[in-house]
Length: 267
Image 1: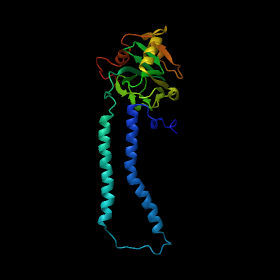
Image 2 (image 1 turned 180 degrees about the horizontal axis):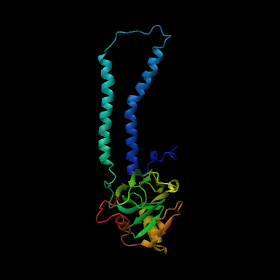
Image 3 (image 1 turned 135 degrees about the vertical axis):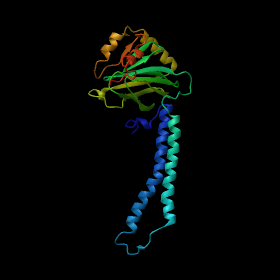
Image 4 (image 1 turned 90 degrees about the horizontal axis):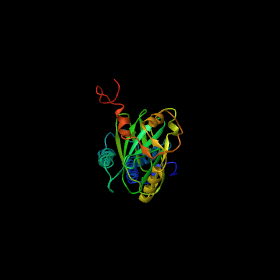
């Protein structure tokens, strides 16, 4: 069951809080739903045509207690859900930094139909593969060099959109080592179904060792290679780059900007 619904099996602080929020909202809504369904079957049974003992009150037009119940209880539920939504919206705001030390910065570029991950501090990059240390905040800075997309690792936290010429921030932190499935949550064309990646959460020592192994590989992600990578392709294998072109992520953003159109969108 949990494999089918990974959001119910959280492995990160944000995903755990989001699951708790879903359960709280469900519980408050059941306060209304359960009595309604109970009364539905109760009245259908009690006032069935064959029950001649049921009291018939054709002139009964108003009941203060009854109206108080069916107005006050739903009103209280709505107020509680509103307060819950207000508090959780601020608490789980995606750009909000997480406690736990300096975050690892990972720049994310959504392409057709693959994910590029750039580690600016480590000077490396990967395609369709994500490595992060457990119990350390990770700040994802997300953009797109393709149609609008959505970045999502269900067991670590909710999805957030990737858009050209813009950067959206998402802060997550894995609390348990493991491999977590990541994917696109926004339909983006022919290769959408294969636009998936694996997010590995490992110990800090294992993360440092992994960075060392990637740096020893011969591949370099130059701007020329990036332009080849950006061409539409699906089922792209995991790829690793020991070095990246200086300012690559900023260059991806700036290609959508010009002096007459600072938003980067065509008129």
